[in-house]
Length: 379
Image 1 (cartoon, helix red, strand yellow):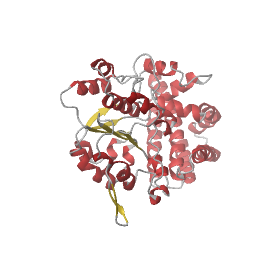
Image 2 (cartoon, rainbow, N blue to C red; image 1 turned 45 degrees about the horizontal axis):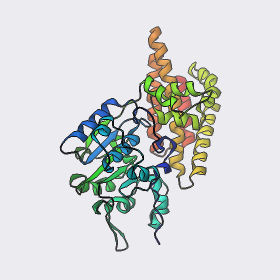
Image 3 (spheres, rainbow, N blue to C red; image 1 turned 180 degrees about the vertical axis):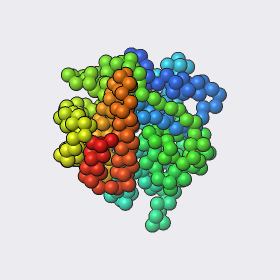
Image 4 (cartoon, helix red, strand yellow; image 1 turned 90 degrees about the vertical axis):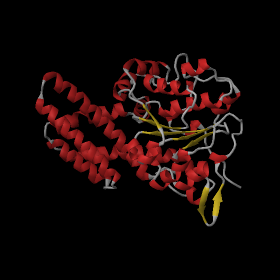
């Protein structure tokens, strides 16, 4: 018996929780993106394939889900389209709310855990494997002479179109992207596909050329304030988190979840000394300890998460913390015309980028962090 496929929207990480009903727009601070989508929805021929690209946590998946609501709901009106806010309380909306709409297919790496294919279930959640893409969307051969039916070619159950959202689409490998090309070029009628990505450059040029592109940017201060007012983040650290997030609700949620303010407070004095040229090897050890704490928390929360992916997320939190520190230092240096400090900040920014590349190349994490601290102190 095939395992149940979990495609619930609320099975995603916290920054992608199911949409709640609010007064005002659903998607905040993305006027240009919303305008592009509403214009297309009003047109005679709505494009079937889209790439939503931009920084993490800025509303790409939220917008894709709201687009699905608008396209899949028979009760959508021109007024709903103009607001980019689908009707609520309808049959289609209620099904999407509980993750049970048969024509909305969300594909993400976490679904390897509930795959009907044993080899896929046994994988760690590091990417979106081709066999998972075949199972949830494309159909086709999966080995051992077996072949899967193609969900993308099935008739819509509710008769009002189908939507496929591929989250973190940059995690599709080259085989998966190549397998997707034909469907992007000639999908069945009434079928819509959205690729959400923070790294559009990792998508093949042939993928990008077949899709309409919509960019998402960090939210402005007022939009972040509105988002915070909705109760997503509250408490004594809320203001620090808002400033730290720099326009990314997703980053704000992660900062609150992993207690980044206390991390920043603990490391602040040592980083000050490091940046004055006082090398301290214990800083690298503290970096490694904090990254490991986050990675262990992620694996505990989801045992199918690979330690490699968890380490990258932990490093991402550290990198965000250091990047925000550099941003503030650069602002101060620019205001006071401290050219040497600006140069040092630029060099340290390059160090961060290099460290991230080395992590993706599987350099030992502790060695990477020790080297980062050593280079940071002399930058």
